[in-house]
Amino acid sequence: MAGGFAPAASATTFEAKITPLVIISCILASTGGLMFGGVTSMPSFLKKFFPVVYRRTQQPELESNYCKYDNQGLQLFTSSLYIAALIATFLASVTTRRLGRRLTMLTAGVFFLVGTVLNAAAVNLAMLIIGRLLLGCGVGFANQAVPVFLSEIAPTRIRGALNILFQLNVTIGILFANLINYGTAKITGGWGWRLSFGLGGIPASMLTIGSLIVTDTPNSLIERGHLNEGKSVLRRIRGIENVEPEYLELVEASRAAKAIFQQFTGINAIMFYAPVLFRTVGFGGDASLYSAVITGAVNVLSTLVSIYSVDKIGRRMLLLEACVQMFLSQVVIAIVLGFKLKENSSDLSKGFAILVVVMVCTFVSSFAWSWGPLGWLIPSETFPLETRSIGQSVTVCVNMLFTFVIAQAFLSMLCHFKFGIFLFFSGWVFIMGLFAFFILPETKNVPIEEMTDKVWRQHCFIT
Picture (spheres, rainbow, N blue to C red):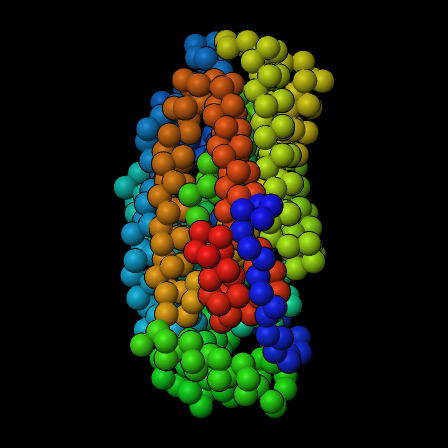
């Protein structure tokens, strides 16, 4: 079988309307994604908390372009969020299963609010990192509960599109962070970074309030023994009276019960350190932030492409096309930087600098309509009910572990690998393409509770 797996058997189609309750619930739940962003290249922020890095950036002739930001403290600040998220996801797995998806999202919102306050009010590095750790706990709880919530509440035929709302809000959060940083960097007095952090309280409040408004999923209610309430909620979100076939399947699934590659694309390194990267290749301070805004906008628009296409052309096709696009763009970036950028000067010509930005945007766009959203969608829809919570926990855990590794190591890797860092990530992209082609099954239009029978028992590794 081409692609290395058997096709999914014909799946059951459950009657369902696309109700306002479902759309509103999904929008509110997905606001947790808006919390992503950072201020790691703002001069006033660096001057207060990382003075060694700040002095390097003010004396460019003393340091290699690739090594100005090579500082373990700065990398620890960035990566501490992900190690906290990794640890928090173990507890979030328990709360998602025993207390429900909604209360887990509420807990995430509270973590986000407290972490935001501590970061905005930070007077020393310890306070800053404690706030960052609490934000990481929020990420762990949100990434555990939100994708599962979205997959369970959505009708099968638009499950992919609604699930990707979370990733869309991640991209919007990064874009807004870049826009805010661009504006607050111009504030005199050196307090602009506090405003950047403080504005994170807006999406944190939205997630917290939204979690109080939405209802829990029928799957979660039935799993916890609330059968009548689960059936009532199922009627409300499907917009029909006859939900018996889907309800019985959920009950049966309940009775039966009694993501690495994403980070090795290099996407988080590129998105979180975009201003640093563009300064490295010769852009000025404002220009580097401006270029980061451009890539952030591309990220948002390309995620919209995924929302439109994921339930039409399928998951595998998006992943495979993106691998080709990401591989080629990173190779081009490596060639340009390797041959045209001198290590101790910022003399990259305008034409080549623009080419780097275009290639970065090409890379970001392909990731944003493929491995970015699908890295959360596919795990959240493929696990059976009895292992869905722990399965999502493993997904978040692995993702956060490798995000931590990349975030902690990226600036040092940039210093030592130089332009070769893009060849490193392109090699991983090639491996990912092989995985998607030979191993990954298609899950488009398969009801979430039929995934085991219709997809995995048909897989060539099992059959």
